[in-house]
Amino acid sequence: MTPPMNPRRKYPPVTLLRTLLALWMLASMASWISGVHSSWNIRVHWDRQIRNPLFWDFDSHRVTFLQPEAVKAGLARGDVIHSLNGAPYTGVAQWHDILSQSRPGDILEIGYSTPAGRTGTALINLRRETWAFGKSSAMLVFWREFVIVSFLPLVCLLIGYWVVLSRPTDRNAWLLLVLLTFPSVVFIGVFNAHGLGLLLRSFWHYTILFAAGPALFLFGVYFPERSRLDARLPWLKWLLLGVFALAFAFLYPSMVVEYYFGGDGRFLTRASDIAGPVISYLNLLFLLLYIALTVHKLVTATSADTRRRLRVLIAGMSIGMGAMLIVFFLLPRFGINGFQPRWFWLRYLGGALFMLAPLTLTYVIVVQRALDLRVILRIGTR
View 1 (cartoon, rainbow, N blue to C red):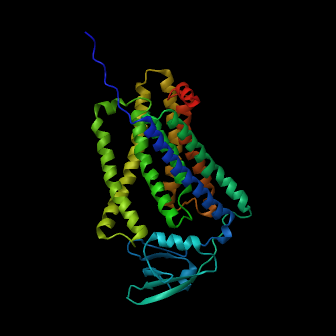
View 2 (cartoon, rainbow, N blue to C red):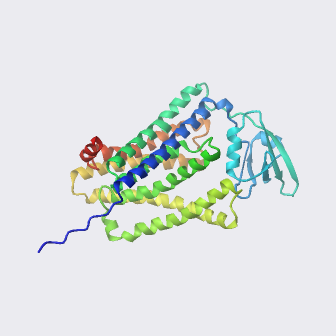
């Protein structure tokens, strides 16, 4: 009697997957190029940039911090913003447009009301952004930053494209692409974007930013083979991802309303106040689960080659992700911020160490042949 054959997993057509990859390449490269252009303007043409004269809560519109020029114009903490340059306040996108198109010496007109109910108009003489790099030339600072915040993320993008193009039906290849796209998003941001560019770049930025945690978790579940724990409790990952998706579903509308409709209402404000911390804690949980699953696979691995790959992966990812958590999340809570002149070197150190994470992923998959490099080379040659 002929033994029954295991049903083969069905994949989307390769043409469809490669079309999806082409769209991904278009979006990620457009975001990267726009980010480099913004970085060029911020660093090389720093004398044309203005510093943000004040900050306010995007939902209540109440002022929370003021620069001296805003105080001189008559604004105070607790005032409520109603209009910018004579136009009713419509959201963060309006503020981005003003900041990106204004120059030092321009006058910003802000309509406001005080907590006592008095209305007024403040005329702020916008000041030039301060130079935080001492005697270093603007061009030198740009190229010094370019290596970490632009060039290395570009290398990660190109490797991600190559792996998925070679193995379009490989689930781990697509998860790798999300993870290798993350550095280009987290380092470049959406600075100086305005208009339609702000909308498109913000959508891409936050989509990849939110997708990185679940992708890392799933990578730990499936790479280099499916976790034995997941085989026993397959529902657990869907439960965690479902909670994450639910919180994510509230954050996107909240951001759109804040950017283009003047701020959240009471319901969205409460929902986003809950969803934000939920996503943050889940991302931390995804990181810990990734490490736990990978260590468990290392302990139970029967192949010396698998153990070697996993040891390299654990070391690189632990250093990279640990550096990101410490430098960009933990230290700022104690007043040590990489954007402050005295601590600016932390940005370079944190960025360089963080890049160990995606570069280790690349090394393990490509150099260590975790996705079978010989197959990739044969397909790529064709």
